Amino acid sequence: MDPASARSLAIRARTENFPVASLLFPRALRPHLRAIYGFARLVDMLGDEVAGDRLAALDELEAELTPVTAASRPGR
Image (cartoon, rainbow, N blue to C red):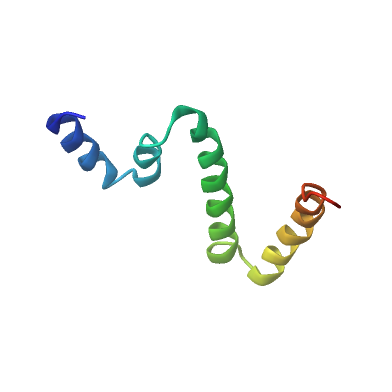
């Protein structure tokens, strides 16, 4: 990467951390990284912004995901 491109990338990274950082990964991995980022943002929103019992909201998300993650484990 040439210095001008690196400088431009660094400037954008200050305000768009994830979208810019994801460009550093191979194109084939980017959808998976966006999925992980989306999950992290969801958990962050449930923990910080939901009105009411935030722990209950996180527990509900965990309960919804448990069957999915259990089914994807080999040998189960």
